[in-house]
Length: 367
Image (cartoon, rainbow, N blue to C red; front, side, top):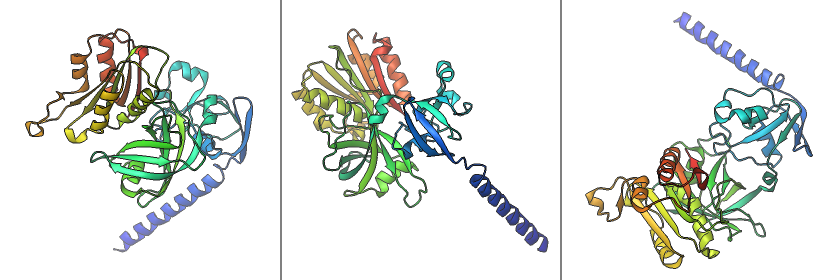
């Protein structure tokens, strides 16, 4: 018994010493002091060294898109490091092409600011703004997806292209001890500049989705920034439009359709929406109304897990099956897709097989 007690005390002591050494190392070795951050050769900031480049930029109110919240799993937060970033890490290489590596492109969430550093980012990121928005509406559109309507502060506006996204900050809450940002596509019309509409699905154990579904309520204030993204509607053509989405991927498609309607864009458009059962469909009446009020618009929902009990009279199977049935060829057509990686890959194959060139297939994919 004494031996067990002695061993326990010894292990506890060693653990305490180890924790102390880690803390000491963080305060000394990890303390890099103030360093210079130069952006695009013209904007210079004095910042505290030691944090990731992504976190350092956020501290200076410069926001880089990061769908994973800085975990190094999305590959979105790329910046070009001209000097002072240190060697590229193995965690970054899977997200880089050889050309990007040669140019010094880094994941800002993985690159540590340890010395004076020079970087290059797109100028439009300086137009990204932070907002403290009021939750005006919340509703369950399915059993796992909520629709949020956020009102910006009086006098503030957000200018975005239909299809782009914002980042929503999940604060500390019971069960969560870290603040993270997550990316969500904007569903509202670009003409509605003082509101943002989002569709957020629940992911078990997801930090931000748990915050939205379990803690957020009407009347609360949320912190968002944006807009971001190179997935957006291209209106400089007269090509027929194919729109495809599943789940919360409906959001940017909604923004595109609302923009087309309000700007009276007369281009033929077909929206294929993939879901599992009738309970997973959203805004059916809205899309039926668009069929009556928009120029040559068709809404085709298709369900992959229906049974006889559902009494479903519409299309069955995955979206690529409906594409095969309704799309004769890809001549003079372009496509906009939003969904998970598997859906995007499947749809790109289906659409290119119909003859739509890959450079006319625009997509936004999420995990």
